[in-house]
Length: 143
Image 1: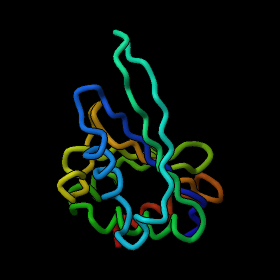
Image 2 (image 1 turned 180 degrees about the vertical axis):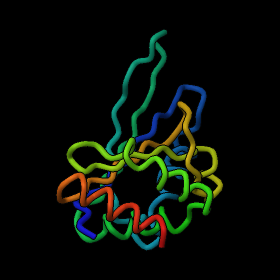
Image 3 (image 1 turned 90 degrees about the vertical axis):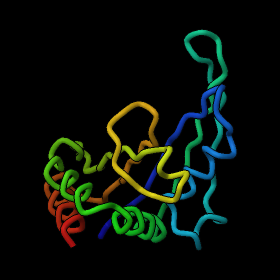
Image 4 (image 1 turned 60 degrees about the vertical axis):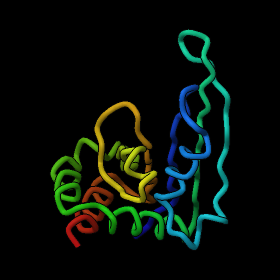
């Protein structure tokens, strides 16, 4: 599957332990790649002046497909079905597939789709047209 890159972003709020959030972020990557990935850190300011840290993980090239395979393989059948039925809403005009994963569950080593605010936002960048991306992602979710 022509996956160009995977990007995952998560916010660390002032009340959270950065190391725990970092662990949650790394849990969406296969164990053998966790030492290789680079994580960018950006300090932001919240609405009330509180510090917020944005952690961004990016994997490119052949390892990006391994990350996607890993994420999809750990999803429950119900989550895979949810993603497959909502695929048209999740793939943009450039073929990028978007999903949100539970930050709390990821910390526990589980990968669950979670449609709320406190999440790991994942963007899977596909090389090719939107229609082909939709078809390929559907197939991947069904297998």
